[in-house]
Length: 303
Figure 1: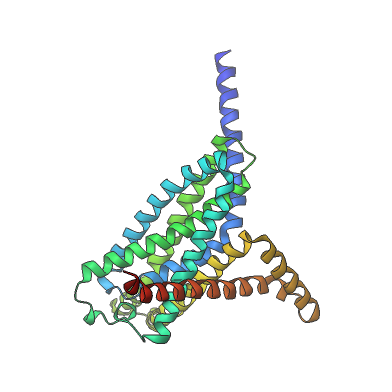
Figure 2: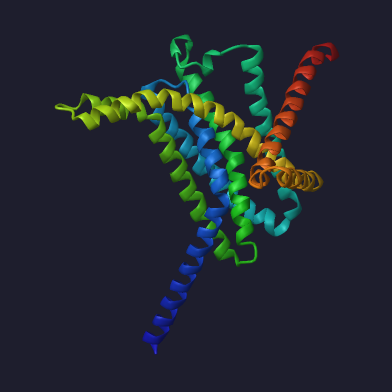
């Protein structure tokens, strides 16, 4: 009798694990798009850090990301259970902040030129510790918003499940996404070192030499591309959150995209919403930046 009960318990556990794995797989598919933006954003966040400090900075941001998710997973479950109407407004505030950060970077490039904190030459940085702390704080802040979106999307896939299932799936997604993103970020920022290692090995073969040389050429250009892609991703993610939260605007964008797609190429229907969301994100972020600039100008006069 005891043996039968044990077998029954093990069968229940196996079934639960299968369900958790299936739900986690579904949630991972739905968050894959955000994962790509997360990767681009976090890779460009560590640009400008000296080569010997890249991995420590990535590790510090990864630890901050884990802390973010330790806060977000229970918070999302509690808000979903007791205050579900707050999820969309909170996400939209986060999206607007992403758009603001992106617009701020664009305005700095356009009107202030290249700043020391965006340059690869760190000779102008007098306080490296303070600089790294600012980088890490900014990256963790951005990660918090992206992580919130990932958690909410994942929660949507298990909304009808019990608390155990929800907690298990969200925890798996949180851990897997963090390890995946920051593992890839660490690999990207050390591509040049891998290239140097391949070239410095004794009796280097033709294949190793070619691969090492290619990595040395690719690495700096890839970081420059990711810096641009990361900024664009801010508008795509932030604008996408704002558009989805504004139901009327979302319907209008989807309708316009479908109409344009029927007039030209059908595949445009799939990419136009993202492009239009990014444009809206740029506009929204620019408005916030300009409002901040105006307030900073008039504040001394009001005091």
